[in-house]
Length: 112
Image (cartoon, rainbow, N blue to C red; front, top):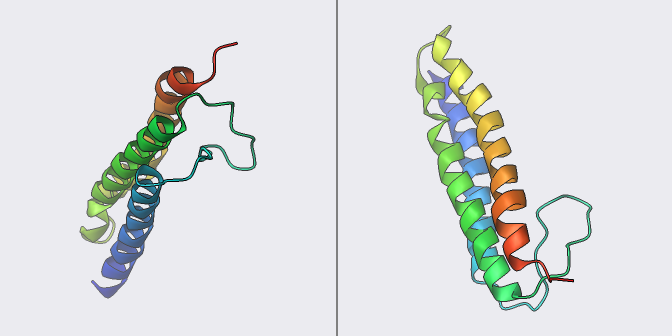
């Protein structure tokens, strides 16, 4: 039981870090847009405040979903439910990328 609880606590800490990052992005007063992709330049943005708010909401939703899909880690040993956090983390990550590329970036990107 202790090992499962430790794994779940670590999972929740990571989820909370995503939520904190989302809250920081959402409430940011900076005139610089936050990046979504690691080590990549952010495209020119028209409405930086709106863009940062949208990105903040995306990260908060991601963090909550990430935390929820970790619940099967509390189940018994040798449970088939372990596949839910593994596949779930992959699927919500892909969904976040799609939401950013299809929804957020085109909406706030400067038109040429």
